[in-house]
Image (tube, rainbow, N blue to C red; front, side, top):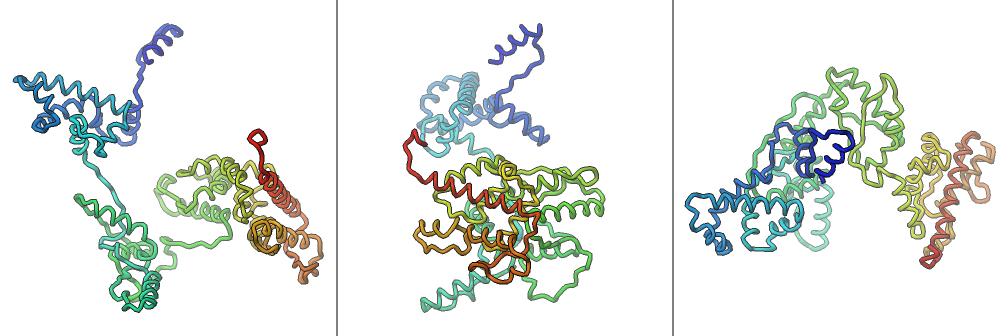
Length: 454
């Protein structure tokens, strides 16, 4: 294929020179070298390197019964030439396996075969060192820590079973590590079970800031509640908590704080900062709205990583949800998540401010789940409209229709929602249209159809 492309380019352009056609493995290795300049020019499984590794390894295995054919072939090889030629053929063969039959060599490593090729490959692969870098927050052994809630559960179980209180043998250590480090405990235990040679490189955080003190307590497995209280400077910025009313405001506060840090700290650059969130896909639209819209001195270079396929293409998630409408409970969070999809917001003519306004309405009108009472009856539950979308929308429209002084008393058994201004009714209408559209599709999709009908 490379020659064909070169010939075609020569025919079209009159010349074809200084072209390179790397195979995927070589291309990926070059990409790795671009990021890690210290990486060697070749991998241990490149054909040239593999030849000499086979040449060195093979004589050590010839006394095994599986290698009897090779032992007979090399019996008269006084000069080592036959061994070199055989090693070259084997290296070429293994190289083809890696490209064309990776499942074969992976199976050998799992012990699927015991012929001489499998044994030789496992010997070669077994000599590759594996380095695992593990960020361990504590220099002490902390996998057996149990937080106070866990201790209370064990104490209750022991009391019910008539056994002695076991919590006297349990260690709390650092309360943050005990309560938030469960996944890390399991992973650390798995690493210790695998064995290997450990090299610890713990570094105690420097400084008197609150964050550094918390980190030192974690590192040394100290419970600070038993120590003397320490005074923290009023202007200590190392650990901050901000209370906001929604994801959009969270991103706005983040943007403001980052601009403040750039002004305050010399040498700090955007590439030095990582922002983490439990569900980054939820925040992606707000990051686009805040960081993407900033210009001039307010602009901060940014990008989002680790998004799901559906998160990068939110329409896919929306379609997936729509296909499950017949089994959906119409939970408030599900419908609000739909409105985070840009295409849906455009369809219902909503901007970010309108979406935030709708979030507040849904929360304060106490919409929980269900299109209406009839939908709940279809699920075998009482025909009760409270906390459904129909109930919440009725409260919202009554609040818009009635004068403010009438919002304190129920109207037809429904308490109007008071905080709704006239210019906001357009967003309310779009919310009602969304609920009505989804309800219509839920009923249409629930009807059995033939394949042609679908």
